[in-house]
Image (cartoon, rainbow, N blue to C red; front, side):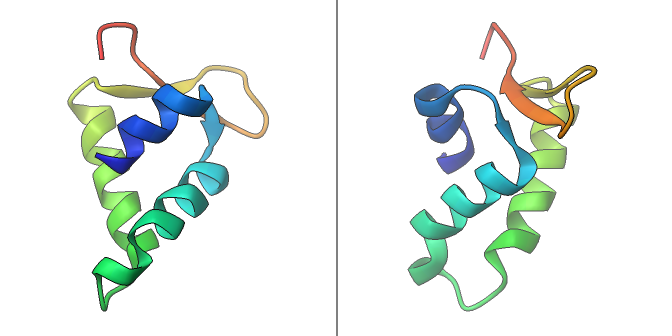
Amino acid sequence: MAVLENLRTHGALTFTQLGNLVEEQLHDNSDNSVMWYFTIVKLDMEACGEIHRVPNSKPQLIALHENA
């Protein structure tokens, strides 16, 4: 999965940075908005505990949970 791969490779990233990396990787695979799908997948991954928002980071960072 592109989100996990990018977080493993680059560490914590902002929503925009991570979204841009995912969009670069997937833009040819979909006729729809990659950023829209990225947003939905990110929210699901947060709910499942795979990733989390780094507290007190500005701009807010997204990172892997240690067990992911």
